Image 1 (tube, rainbow, N blue to C red):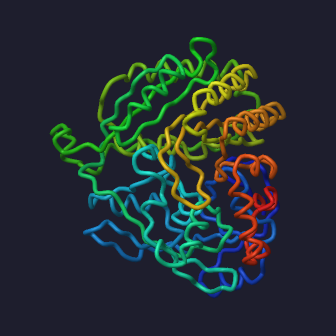
Image 2: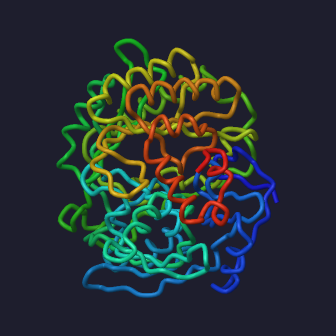
Image 3: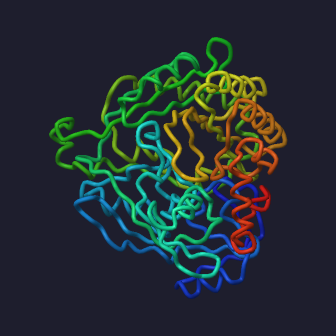
Length: 440
């Protein structure tokens, strides 16, 4: 079948298997050149193997829960959406969550996902107690910070290239309600946005949407959103009747590809202006439901079709703290000058790093979505150079077009990771289109 990531670029002809047992999975490992695939929400080709893509959808059981500690034991194919549906009514919510709930537990570990609270709580690695990994010989190994520690470190953030995650134990966060106290603050430019994010340490969650077509005094014009879990005292009498069952979000489905070229400089400038104006009307604090705060794009099923039939790619880098301000300014200058703005432009502050090959490091991360065209791909190459020149590195879960040379120039760990895979005999067994492209 034709197979891609969520960005629908690049597309590969792939053989896809969906084993129903560990013995069947072991047979796929012995065939070699395989990669595990969850719900296909990594943006590029990290979960695609042309000869042996193994879909983990049948490994989808919730296995155990400790109501004292919030520890869940689940198989790798369980969706985050199902975890929330099961445990939020009991007063538990994911301690770390990406921007979509339609990801699997195995994918969250492989990408070491991060959320709007990384500046305080770090990435998903911090709440993983252990996981069982099927290695290149078909043997299942328990990995944790006390057992098979090197394998634990390389697997978290290792994009499925060390083995197949079968099941894992991780911890949820206790919450009193399903509501979020959200505060929206305007930032006239990049310096103001960084200042607000630097001052957001007291908020559990913080993120900025950026109008990346702004120039001059308006370069980096943003809306900064902060949030904390609400308590019952924050709720109205009506809201207390549905403490966890908040207002259902209306879900629509985009069932067609938006015509190519509709997202251009003029329309993006208009959309950004409308978004900023609409957000400015919601300044200050108000209560919002958890679904709207954490997963706004999940309200549009198939939103990736907005970018047209050629698909889209995301550029996401993190810059170290001492280089964040000049690096971000250079990146936004390049985007604005090219007139190839991104509507989904997100800025977050990161805390420390946790996974052995994980993306985050102390600094600022910028994520930009672009429709796939020759001009945007050329722009992405320039953005790569700017990020590398400022000590930045890139998120493999969002990558679908980076070169091996760029990866190695940005991240010295890539060479160590590749050498480990060669030494341990993993390279012929676990491989994706991305790992081949990046020579991992």
